[in-house]
Image 1 (cartoon, rainbow over the protein chains, first blue to last red):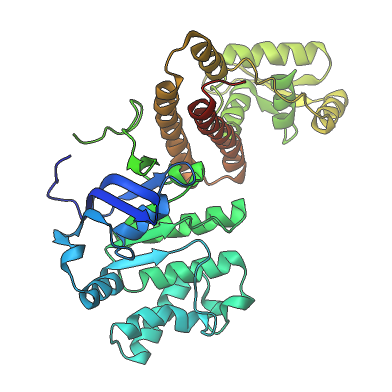
Image 2: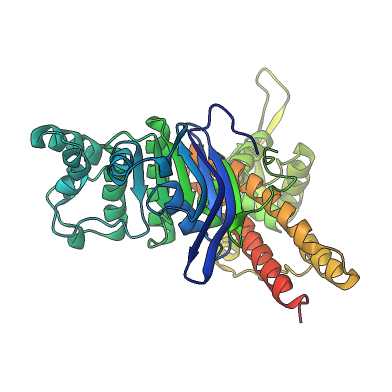
Length: 234
Length: 173
């Protein structure tokens, strides 16, 4: 697999073990700017571990992940945190909103951590809540929201910093089919509009079909693409 | 009787000629093969013979002569009956996917590889339908596409389970 110059994110030979459990054995992936890729595979195949390695949340035992040509392992902890805050967005299965904060505060939080002033951050957060049609929840806490509402707020929080790439781990996993479909639609549309790349981990074929490309993970490595699908670069 | 019933359903909106019926059918069932005119007129002929539709008038504007059909009371009753009647589920056992996988298993062929490639083909089809679905304005169109998507999804889940089962046991038993 060769590096294409346009790749925004690359991973090569990524290995990761937890104790005696090997989660990833040489996983490799490239993501182009603005592209939507689904990572699928049977449960226990290493999907979430790979996503966390790509997003710099976990560091691989060996192998290299690069973002815009910079190796994540070459960055210090603080630099990596700054990169994650400014360039990456993260959406998880259960939204993972801060329960003590309102929707507005949750969405404004990443901007304030970046050093933006409170009124600026609140104004940007309000815009995103409006865009995702949950402006009425601005002063509501996550515990008083439905699953679908909380997920929209989480999507707003992931996109408020205008990230280059959004990582989503089972973004519809906790929602019923119809609510999940709406949340997925919102996520795909919003990332497309902001021209952010989207990397989705899912076991749901319908979610995978919303992506432009699927990579299948099996036993910790990417499986070769089938004849019917997009070919794997060699 | 299915196409006949669908045409009765279109005529329930008001009288129409054959071309209107074809257009309405194709719009309601985007995943189905478009109706051939011959099929429409043959079906209308049967419905008329059975007293379920009647010729209202024959119009000739600029183009060819067109016969406008309308529902009769018997047609309305037949439609009501059809809508309320439950359908026989399946049968799904004769699906080519299943035939191929079982035969591969018996002959010792690599069905894992076949299933892997078939997954990509299925997901491609699902991707195209998903795009079509998100562009669809009509709720009816989305619902019809949902049905196809749900079947593709079921096929995919079956393929994944089968691969796991074969990898683990090497047999369906």
